[in-house]
Image (tube, rainbow, N blue to C red):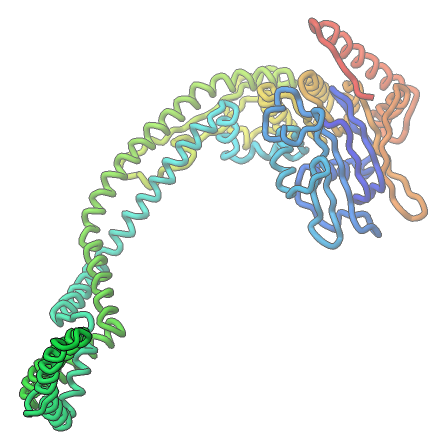
Amino acid sequence: MIHSLRIKNLATIEDLELNFKEGFTILTGETGAGKSVIIDGIKLVLGEKASPEMIRTGMREAVVEAVFEVPQEKRGSRESGFLEEGEILFQRQVSQEGPGKAYINGVLVPVKKLKEISPALIDIYGQNDHIFLLQLDNHLRYLDHYLGLAEKKEEVAGLAQNLRSLLRQKNELETRRREREQRLDFLNFQINEIESSNLKPGEWEELLTERNVLRNAEKVAGLIEKALDLSYLQEHSISALLLKLGEAVRELSRFDPGFQAFEESLNQSAIAVRELSDFLIKFKEKQNLGPDRLEELESRLNQIEKMRRKYGQSIEDILLYLTKIKREHADLLQSEEKLADLAGEIHRAFSEYRTQAETLSRLRREGARHLEAQVEKEIALLGMKKAQFQVKIETELLAQLEIEKARDSGLDSVEFLISPNPGEELRPLRKIASGGELSRIMLALKTIDKEKAGSRTLIFDEIDSGIGGKTAECIAEKLRALSKRHQVVCITHLPQIASFAPHQYRIDKTMEKGRTYTSVKELEFEERVLEISRLLSGSRITPTSLQNAREMLLHNLKEEKENESNEPGSVRRGRV
């Protein structure tokens, strides 16, 4: 429940503090006195959108603070981490300079955190909330919420979304089938062209080197002859001289073992010279290929250059590209198999969706009868004693060819029907119900919903608009009944409702030095008589209206006490 509310610098409110009590509380006042500003303040502290225009003229910021008591049964929920001795302090600042700030127990939090936690503590119902009943989607949502089918509905929605995803994949594959054939032809051409060129890593560099040699054949031939003469062919070549030097060193080692250390290095030098000579001879043989080899090299280099321009800067790049397009080619070849696999997967997914959606539909039909009985019971207490209420459920049976019609909400369309008077056929509630009837039915639905919920604060903002007489008394009785389990705060202009609550505050608007101020005062009994008299007769308060107000208040408060005393073991606590 909400213990206290403080509002500073919000519209016509300069500094206002309200201490709420348990049970049923009424807020009354003249039109325009500032009742809507108080509701706006409560909405702000609950995390609703703020605007700098809401700040009182001349002030830099508006501040709203609210202290909530968390019921014992909810102290293990997500808001329990913010508890201090069973209470939570919400604070909201709205600034001229920016988006403002939010605090929980003095700790800075994102504004959305207030909005996440507040639904477990408080609900606000406005005078236009019955418009909820004019939209068919809300009928289905309410039925599922009332029956506790959120988890099953979420499962069905997930299956529907998966089914649509599979259908999109299948449609994309089918749409791309012609493109796939064209792409396959193109990839086949590229793969054949690259593979037929028989490229080898490092080949480009080797061919460039060989071409450079052939282009300088005469100079290279002279250098080869000179190198062969020096290393091998001449009588005094390096090979011959090394051989003679080695023999001399071996002879010397007979006289001094120190020469043996040079024998190995001389042998290695002789081997290196011989290997060089062999390489020179082979290199000379390759040069004998002449112009034919150069022409062959130029042709090969041109072929590789063409491939480089098309597929990559180097042979390694071209071979990597070949691997890539081979993989794409294989994937495209498998797309027909994928289509077949998808068809099977879609069939299985659709069967699962239909099974779970039919289960959801069955649960709705079973639970709808209970909801009908509950609503008829509640609206009878609200003055619609002979009215009939029905939940109409139309279920669409999907065939295999209608998979694309799978909906997140399942197979059902739901509409509330009503017959307000005996003998009239049931017709769509959204088409035939009056504003007063819609308000009563909405209150009945909210009452049923809250009977299942844990204790919280319920704020009703002029939901009695457009009704009066006996109906107003019925609504007052219903609100008082709700206050046995919840803290109920109601803003009203009806004396019938105001007289039912044990607690009443009057909201006034005054003018001082050209500024408007909104204030709130808790009313004592005689003050309540005067206020209810005003609600009865307007500004012309007469002895008769005062007498009527007194009798109405005494009667309804006496009835409240009698009801309390008839409740076994009941205990009422008031916050003062």
